[in-house]
Image (tube, rainbow, N blue to C red; front, side):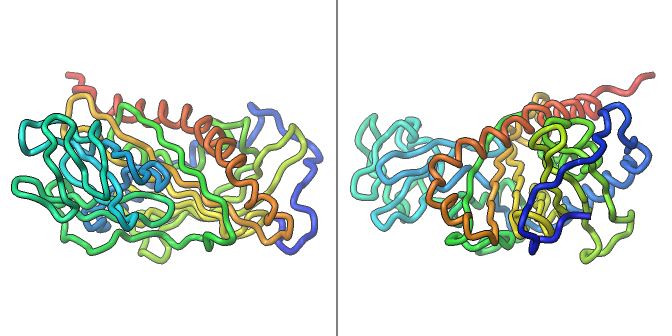
Length: 334
């Protein structure tokens, strides 16, 4: 059980640390059918054709940025009001890469022949719906998602920006979005696969094959490891609100209400023989402790550390997801 957030000291001293090989095996509980059914339910939920394409801080006022989603080349920039603009990444004139062009007074000016692309669109070039939620950037691609479009992406509930610190990690793996989501819907691997970060992990509740939306969650008691004996125990809940998103929310213990959003964005078209997927993970940390105000003021120093911690975990988890794809893509043995 996680330590109550009302207690004055968030750390716990483990009395008898368990060696890695002697911890309780989790393979019986981590049933492939349980993970597969949770994945299928996630994939059935609507996204409104919205895809995460990066962090809000990635796109600044005067410089366009290029992205790729499902084989579509995108360009993103900000207009005179600072609002996000997104559209096809090739100039409609002769196909110049617009990510290498320039922004002048909120208008993208092609560096090949000077064609000006207004945020409202010009002949042969029309912007796509885009949204900046303050942490992540989203683009709606109806031709890719093929769902009923939504006016805005479904953004998970987050701590208030004035009471939190956020950082965004991006990595790329040779797999499909489903493999990323399947990795996150397997909390049982945490203390075995990431012993440098997690210990004393116990999944206290997991969905059944026919779980409803209110029960479709994984509840995990786990301790973040600081040293061999010094840990921070928490309770976390994993949910999948959309086909390419998994949310981990701390519900008890230090950092209560903190959120980790993992978004999987396809870089290659569906069915590609060598698929690539971008993992865009937003870590949004908060705390009820008065000293967290200092942490918020030190956010520019904390963000690289938060990204590094996420990157270390994803160095392993991308290998995990890539392995899942390799096994799925192998031809059947005859």
